[in-house]
Image (cartoon, rainbow over all chains, first blue to last red; front, side, top):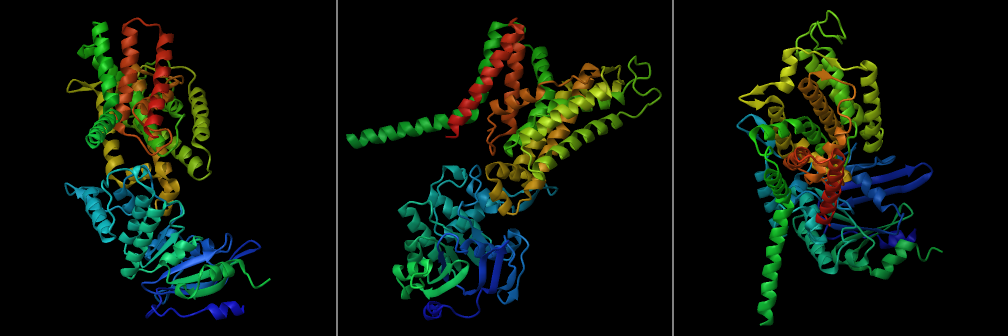
Length: 263
Length: 334
């Protein structure tokens, strides 16, 4: 417990109101307490890494923020307003965008269709028939990809034919297009080669520069230290550390993750 | 020199890539044209307006079912029940469209406007689709099993309803399968109309896009806010509706509704879709491809018969072509 207090510090970069605030959130599955009494705040323009060993409760915590699970106890506030989300769709409509580990893209469809999937813009043909506005989708996709400094030569190609980095870029573009207030990334570099990992890091920094806060779940210490301002460490469902990335090194982090010094 | 050589190889590779892409997209049309050319040379009667219309009319009801099953396969499902649903809707509809002097009159004294059997056939067809879709979406039953069940259940109901052909139908009813508008057989008009409407729907409506999304990555579609259950039920309902339409067309074409109609037609329809480039693993397929696939099956059947090829050989040729089409599809998607 002392470790927690010692290593908790305030982020000097964080300013103003938190975008999202969790207070004493708990989630149980039957007899198992997956997340226990966790409180945290995320500020604009902040990249927060959520670290922890397998089964530490990272994913469950994230899924409560992204609307997949409902907390059994505790509250979630989005910009000071308490929110309860019945579905991931509701979370998305509030501006909480999640990029899942398996990317959640339809590989048989092209980038523009994926960016707009579930929220297609419509136009009227001859003023009567409503139909999907593909041209609007293409121009908007170009705009958002430009904004993120992503080049994808042919937006009409199915995702299947793209590299892992390009896919991740499409997934991020899709999240950002909808004016995300908060972007959550689940192991964003897990399946990527080194140059593509770097591209994802750049994308995270671009988001940060646009003051969109990002929560990254990762095991990968390189990932964490490359992009995170702050690191929240989970162990056995509890938050055991909330530290500035600049103030710790890998050994400190691993120590927190596995509970060294507790014995 | 070395540099130049690699440059040339790259150009060549690019050219081959383009040729491959072209063949991937239009190869199927080339095969159809080659078949038409071959049969025209081999048989005098083949390339006549009468015979061509005959082929299209023959494939029209199978084509309707193939359009439905194409949508189903794009979502990653399958529909084995369409032939039986065709028979069930055929006997139901014809029992409401018999003339009073018919020898097999089911309901003496009952005379209803032609719209009644039409609505009944389409309604019952759609209902079987709602049942299929609900079993698959809500009860998580694999599409193969759910529609296999429908295949035997619908056939059973058709036989219980009438174990003999219901014939001698009203002229209005027979118009559906035998009539023509502007010299074009009515079933052909129906097929073209349905193909165009479904093509536009698949490409230009959210529902159509979700059908592809569902086959590509169901989980992704759900996370994106697509009501995947509703899309599934919708697709099977449309397929059932088209089976009902095919039931109307077949029974009015031959002037009788029979519980044995449409036996095995679901397999021809699936074959048409697959030959036309619809991927059985879902997410890929077009209506125009399926129509070309149906034409290939129709041309093959018709041409081989004109050449007096044994019926058993025709089934062997058809089976082989289906397998080859799947092999090509798998290589393309690798």
